[in-house]
Image 1 (tube, rainbow, N blue to C red):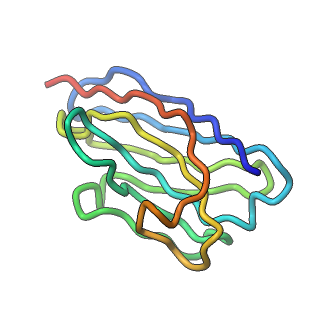
Image 2: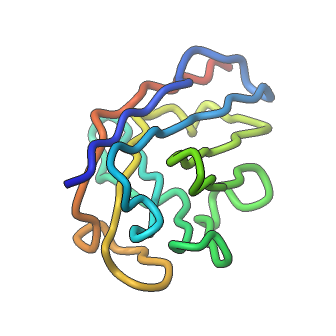
Image 3: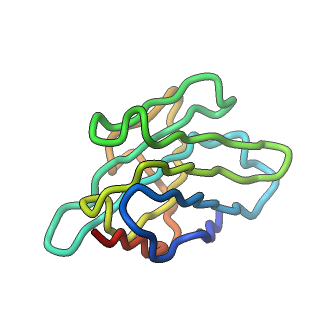
Length: 124
């Protein structure tokens, strides 16, 4: 069982930056690949970025590539999402998720545990 708690969301102007953090409970954090997803009103939940168990491999959605960076610290049981050059279209609830799959899972159903989400609002 893994419990995930996100933090760091808020209101920011376009062009600004935010750093989201997800703290995981349990002693097996390094056994899980991690992902950040987001869901805007009326839209499907979509993958933003994902990272492998060791942190050696990662992927980012095309819409955020070059602006967002996922990272993890297995000693601290945390996974972060650094978001720069934010746009109004980045406005959504952002969710942290854990997957027992190997590699860098990119499909929502591959994730076993989810946090409650944190709101990110980007004003124009």
